[in-house]
Amino acid sequence: MTDLAPLEAARWAARAGLVLPDDRHAVVAATADHLHSVVSLLRELDLGDTAPGRTGEPDAAV
Image 1 (cartoon, rainbow, N blue to C red):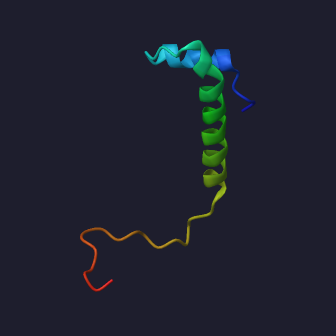
Image 2: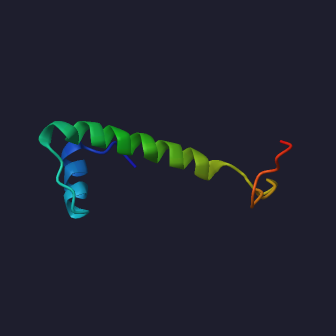
Image 3: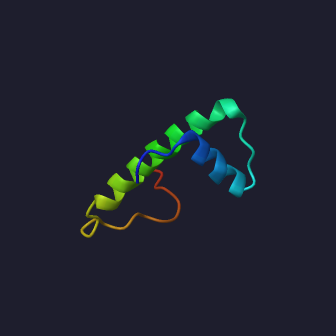
């Protein structure tokens, strides 16, 4: 994905039912770009040997 243009961010927000003030378009686009880069890095992680997380109440002794 290339950098999200501010007007494109506004268009996507409007499509989702959110109206962004003009001064927020660039900030929202930059935030979306950052989130996309983080998710892309997480997708590259090999979690095949990672133990599953615990469920339930935490131990009192920990």
